Image (tube, rainbow, N blue to C red):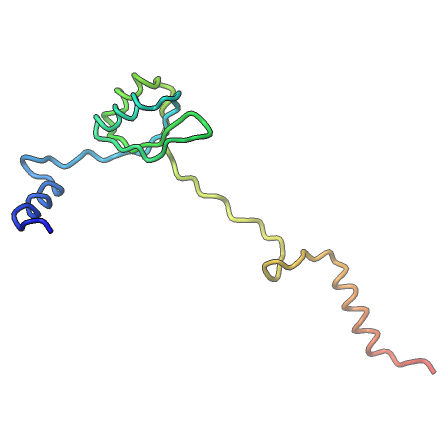
Length: 127
């Protein structure tokens, strides 16, 4: 546990104030960069940003950075290597006419078979 005086200081620092101005809002960005990422990670953190992902299968990072930091990061990565990390919602899936999850799609034969079966049940048997 923190001593009472220390916990109060931590809360005041988190809220901002005259000695601790509130942090600038962070923007989510994608940065295309070659490995090693260390120089760019260091600059992002120095500018008050947070690296949220260091990608393995392609050369790049995801980060949250103050808008003012993009100039310094662009100096390392290149001005055309930074883009906004936007959330893009997927379109709704197409309606395949499925009655239940996992049921096969109807081909039209089901209706014909059902109609023939119903008609056959009501036909008198020839004798």
